[in-house]
Amino acid sequence: FYGSKRVGIYRGNNQIETANGEIIQADDATMIIPANVGERVVYKAAEIIGKGLPDWMGGFANAFHYKGFDLSIDLQFSLGGDVMQEFFHTTEARFLTNLLEKGMSQDVRLNNFGQGANNEADDTWVANGSYLRVNLISLGYTFSPKSLTKANLSALRLYANVNNAFLFTAADYLGYDPGASSHVDSNWGTNRQFFVYPTPRTITLGLNITF
Figure 1 (cartoon, rainbow, N blue to C red):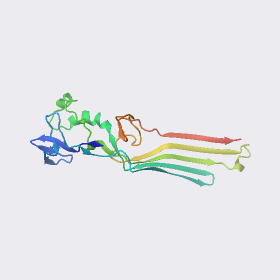
Figure 2: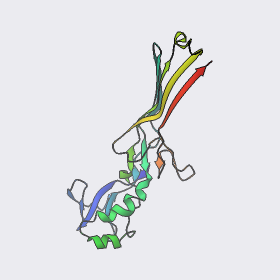
Figure 3: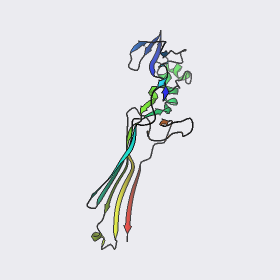
Figure 4: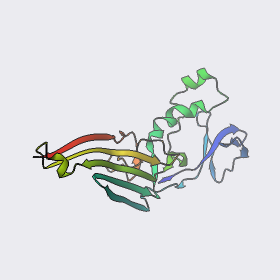
């Protein structure tokens, strides 16, 4: 991912307020100073700010058996990749930029919507895309043939499956699923997400009977 590093909010007189409230002096050589009051966010020159391809992807699967019970667990993981959260363009970029202006009244902020909005991708849009998904939990019980004699059954198994049971993500990722795809065309690459639907969690209850 290629973009700018966000320095802070321009406060005039070549002074910038950083995210932690510190006041620093702007450096014209390395920072992009806003040209008008509608453009308040200050950046450093564009550079590489993340990568969409993970270092590792894989999974673990195992099955456990105890007497008539069986338990299967499938885990899926991705490690070392970033997600460009393109939905910041429509959420933070168009709304919150003006709300960050402490020196502007609420009326001016509302009337100024869309003017000087911060639509450029920067490093605050990039999040850690690593995740661990509990892809499947399956629990079943198979009755012994002896217990089925009176019911005239040769086999009986009860089971419950949970797909996409749990998803663990990094704290700075604000989307639904870092593994979900967004637009797939020439304008979008790996791990660039706009608005995507969350991956559903499904629960299945089943009964296998053999007469």
